[in-house]
Length: 165
Image (cartoon, rainbow, N blue to C red):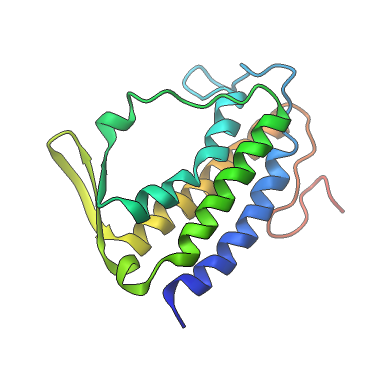
């Protein structure tokens, strides 16, 4: 079995779960955040919607300089429709890119830098798991707390939530 085959199945399942969470994001108070150091609900949800771009960055580039990335403008969805469209578009592109990835490409090294400082070097397959899969799951969990604190019913992810019986 090619490396990308099992990844594609998992990615598809996780995308369904992520979309369930994004569908519930309220935009009545987009600047709400649970703590001064936290992202706003608008930014967190928008960030989740754009994470799939890391699939293409990881597959198409040999590495990333995070000091350059930090200077780029961030996406802020204005409403749920724009949020879901961004996620659907990014996910489709990411899925298609992973579908075309070869084992050789996935086992090739990918590096992260912060200016001249090398942060890590790892196989692309590991970078995808870390920067696309795990990164999405991490922020999706954060979003579930945001929803709970705003009295929005939280959808179940790997089974029913307290709001789903």
